[in-house]
Length: 191
Image (tube, rainbow, N blue to C red):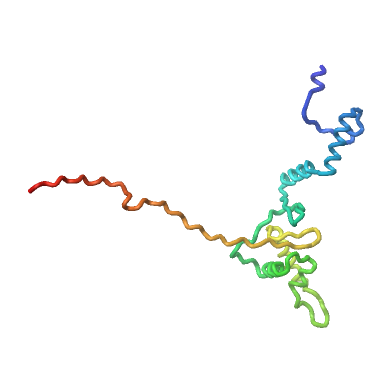
């Protein structure tokens, strides 16, 4: 009967509070040392989180000298070379290329500096604001642009134009190397 109730296993899922409040000191000490190790250097935790995010179709990338990891719902794409976007999207791209890491709040001022009269700054019209928001949303949904939590916009670079490689022709042996039957030497005849 005992064999049916208890069995040996290498893995088990147990609530954390059951491990710390349990009667077995060895299990509790082992659990506490593992938690302390993960607090100092959470490699196992980070790998498990990364795996769950990838299963959820999220994309992970690192940025900067410190290698800070970021998570995005859209895969990063470089802008195709030789492809033109709508004029309003091209305007956003040109502004972000001239001023990298521009904040979203400042983008409208850079896009529409001529908005308003000289005496009174009105800002962009509601139609201009709506169009810019739609273009930003489209650029982000396609993966050409990331917007970070602080509002900073990062534009991804253009793809480098690929030059087609010339197809390598099959090397044919030189004409002199072709195998032809050698003419048999004729014996000179005396006449």
